[in-house]
Structure formats: structure tokens, C-alpha cells
Image (cartoon, rainbow, N blue to C red; front, side, top):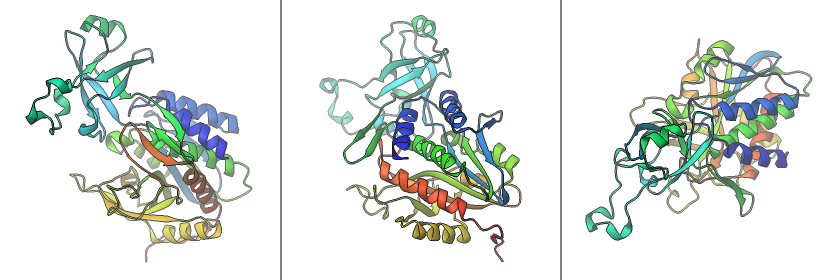
Length: 361
């Protein structure tokens, strides 16, 4: 299992898949699903679903395929690109960043976000973060015509230059750990439960556009009409010097659940998990001897925030793995946490009682 999780995570991290442009990521997952012996289904937005028939309650277990990045806004006459941000891209890390622009035929064209030479930087500029609207991408091309000849146009997707490697003690570092690691986990969960003899109906869904507007999962959720929704994503690690007062999540210390999430920056939405599901995951973790971490903080949001409101309401919970340096070009997770998360999910799914009472009365 650990080898498959490592390989799938690393392979998926190297595939560009900006929100709304998840095609290559979906192709990888589709082929992996077929190798398991399963038949995926798709919708018009691009969500991929695997259904394991079963009894009540109906479960939707999901994670997102897309990554944040940029999109071409303007092509200057001299070949430089101006761009817009797609998702929560921190402006302070953009200067000098290596990027890949995805051309019309799917190729990756390397470039760099330009930054003024240190030797020309004035004293009043040294401690300022310029707006992304003042930045540009240098592709090494001389004219707008050359840029367009290479298959780049307004709207072309741009991502951090894909990278993925294992460092230290089974730490994985690189681009789009969020949430390609989650995709790898759900592929392994599918392998684990494929041979089960009985249990609830489980719909494993790989969703789109989470980093863009958090609503790409809604059409498939409206179709499935789940009674239980389990969303897989990152948990912010608080074990680095700059995050120690943020919480108690530590890399390598096991998977976790979110006890409270709220965006707090203009979006009035978040998730407070269903108490029955919290208890169920606590019991599954105890049974499997898995250390279960917990987080509660403002500043993060997942697509579960909207899935929980489908139909008559869905019993929901965010489950995930610790991550450092989220939304940068070098995110970090621990392979041991991915193994623990896989075991936790398989155990929790297989032990959901047929008569579980989800009505809060």
C-alpha cells in the first residue's frame, strides 16, 4: 500500500491541472480506476465518480483534482504575459517563481515571473510586496506573435512548474500536494473496499474547481443525494516556528478531522462536523490504533461547505492529512499520514451501521 500511495502521489503532483482544466489529472485517475476493475462515470463539469453499491446510508467520499494557479490576462507586444490569479495564490511568493503555461495542444511551456534585479532595487522597494497586476511572465519569447504561435492565448492556464520528490523521513514535497495526495488516498481506499462483501453505498468522487469557487462538487452531490458526506483535504500543520500558536496538528503524527472551519475573509461559510460522525471516526481510529489529530481555526474552507447544504442537508465531516506551506510551490506532507488516513477511511466506511441515526433530535 505505501508504495502505491507514494507513486500515485508523486505522479499526480507532476500533472498540471488548474481549476477548470483538470483533464490530464482525470485521465490518470480514470486509468488507475480501470486497473482496479471499476467503471468510472463523469458529468459535464468533469467530476469523476466510482460507485460501490450497498445499503443505506448513502455515502459520498470526495476530494478535489484541481490546483490553484494563474490564467493569462494579456499578451504584451514584446511577448510578456500578464495574468490573473485562480484561487488563493499568495502574492508574496510570486516574484521569481518558475511556472508552466499549458498550451492549446496540452504541452507545458516553461517561464518565470520576472523580478527586478537586486542591484536596481531602491531602498523603498526592498520590503514591499508588489501587486500581482504589476507582475509579468517571461517565456523567453520576443513577440506576441511568437507567444500565440506556441499555442498560448488569453485564458491559457498557468501553474507552478510541476515538481515532486521524497525528502527526509518519507516527507513528500512539491507542487499540488493539495490535493493530489488526497486523490492518491482515495484511489487506495477504492482498492481496499473493492472486495468487500457488504456495507453502505459508497460513492467516491474526484471533484473539480474546488480551488476556484468551491462549488464544482455540487452537481454530483445533487445527483447522488448523500446522507453522509466525507471530504478529504489538507489540515494546516502547526509544527513550524511560524505556526506554533495556530493549533496542534503535526506532520507525521497521523490523520485528523476538522472540528471547526470558517473562511472569515468575505465568505460566510464553513463546516461544523456532525457529532455522530466525529464519534464514529474517533472509534474507528481507536480500533485501528491510529492517532487522530484535530483542528479548529478560521481561514480555511472546502467544498464540503456547500455539499452539506444539498437537498435536506447532509451529515458532514472534513477528514485530512497534515500539510506544511500550503498554496505555495513547495507544499509538504508525510507519507505515513497518508497511510494512516487510508486505513482510517477504510475502517470507518466498513463499520458504518446500517441503522445509524443522523437526525439531530
